Image 1: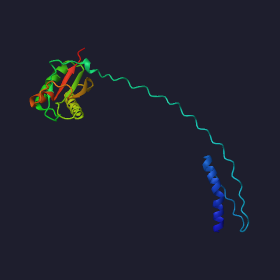
Image 2: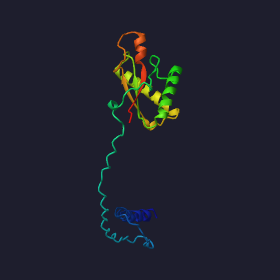
Image 3: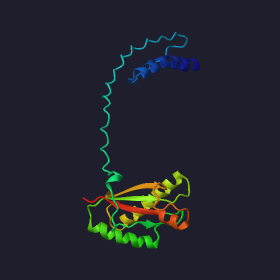
Image 4: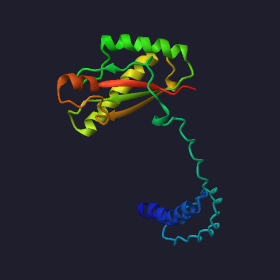
Length: 191
């Protein structure tokens, strides 16, 4: 009995493998087992159908280039007296209460000039590495932008830029001068 099961398995294995390679369903019919002691004959498997060629892949078309950013160049912006700078504590980017009052006045002008784009520059004093000051200047510009957006100024009008310590308004090496350099300055491009 064990021999018969093994021989059936040996007989079916090549058929199953051929069918798996041809990727077609297998149908097998078991004939009545041969009498004991009779030799087992197996019909050769049917020839496999030739593989079907896959449809060619569509050609890869590169995506169109992204539209150029509508971000204006910093050289197109200028300072105006109605948009005043705000100042920050050493190594900080939180909006102080005095800075919030200044920004509220800036918001009044921005709301009365709804088409004027604004560039917010973040600045630092000379202390710290260049990389650290660029990151801190960016946080100051973002904090300023976030305050303006939270108070009704359209985010699409606002662009931020960090100069870090590159553009000081004061070059003396004392706290009074450093305090003037820790700022966010808003510029605009009038139509």
